[in-house]
Length: 150
Image (cartoon, rainbow, N blue to C red; front, top):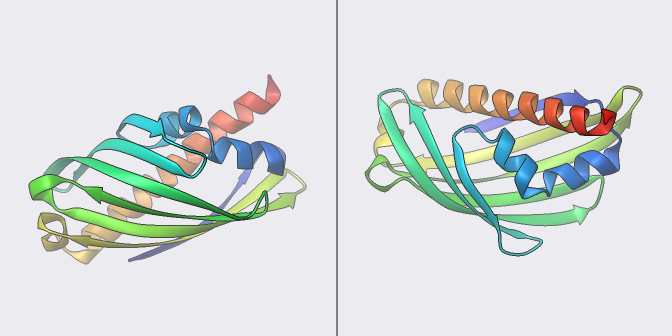
């Protein structure tokens, strides 16, 4: 599964980049996030509860950030285990570009899933993933924009 999109965030590039590396901001924005622990500048651990179709699961996972060319670009990889519901693993490339209204954030994410989740069907998984990504980035844009104004 692959997801691509872009969003304009009303804040300068360096503020957006810092927010993408701030566990408190990320925790507020990740749908279903119950816990987000920063182990180092590049290692995060998360606990997320999600409902995808008829399957509700608590995922425990890890995320590794790779700052390729801060603050213009970085990538991340992650894995999550939802017990009987299955697993997910994937990664994303994120690019930040100066824009007249703030910062243009562009992402390209890829994910693989297995277990019960994989049995739900690609269209349900794809549409749910798109909704979750859109919800995250909308929330992220709102939170980062608020922080910039104050």
